[in-house]
Length: 273
Length: 298
Image (cartoon, rainbow over all chains, first blue to last red; front, side, top):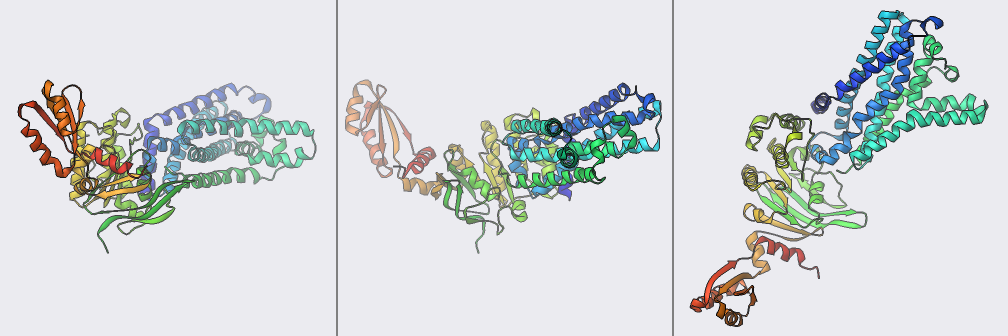
């Protein structure tokens, strides 16, 4: 337990020292503020409060930014140590590999949670101040923060997986970029293409929603949008989500970090420094 | 049954079709300093990694004070200095060493250790600003944590200046005095010469020699090299008389077996004024190493 905490404390120190924590928080705050103010125009026409609009805009933002920030910390976790020659040394100490990985994960997740909470929280507070907020929209904001952290956890774990599988930190960085592109952009494009080809047939109605929710980034989107009427109305894209049971998106987003972490743990076990 | 801190028995390690270590046995007892010599790719680092349990064995067994490699008690008993190690550039030396001490699970005098390896001025600076030698010293400081039973040092002198090397060997001596079994993988033959109790030579994963320097010298029977500088006119005569080869003008070089050395010296002394100077080179570890590393290659 103390070993796990020492690893976590050291990783946290590194994130603070190399200004990752500061930069990530600033980026989150700036983006969230920009979207809140830029997206505040349609409030009147839709009849929802400004915080709801803000949460909708920030959901779209988080799909791109949470995985990116998470991968940016995690890709180096194993490959970087291995490249420096410190991995063999670290593993010669009594700490187990699971302990090491979990320690890093805890610190990275805490940093990510901090950046998300401060970023979205600030934007949410400002939106609520200027445009009002109800219990529903406050709940939507809390859900956005929580699910963003979960989405970050998925990509932290995927980053470790890539880091354990690659020979160098540079290769891990490249693979992380590929991973981001696939999950966040290409997967959706592929599905969109399939739906267009299908032309409203069986695929679109029964298979497509499940395929969509199998991707953590889309599960994140569906969970935030479908669970809130206000957000769904503001985003205007709830059709596909309605055919799925309520538990589908949360289940996907909760299972993904666990599965990805176990995969990373298994890959790390096979690393010979 | 023995007091061997480290015992390696009939270890074999295959990587694909290549046998990296072949039927290798080696023991290091408490307080003993053993040098592990071998050319690049001879299997020195692989051997160390098998002792640490970082890479699995194909056959044979290793025991660290009775524990299996990679077990918690074995990891607690061993200290390791990787070759050309580096640390996270954002941490200070003190922070890095504190992490290692916590992982080791024992209270340690961090400041004292850093002072011991000569990092007292730099301990609160980031590792990113350290020179290669300073990083090596930081690596050495973590070896001293928690009084290890076995210390495995992979090329510990790489990147160190001559004075730092002296310090390093002083620290190694201190470790051994406190009962640590020290295994040093090295290329720096001249230093290992005076500073170790026993020398093991690896060639392509096979142990070709394992003994004290004196015994190895006797076994190899390597000749002493003598270089005689003669006056201009006499060089040819001396070369003919002594049966050596003439080199660069007035010098003659001869090789003689250990038991003929004194006889040859008397011959040279008898030549009187014809000999201006004489230089003798006894067989060095380099020659010995070359002898054992090449043996059987034909």
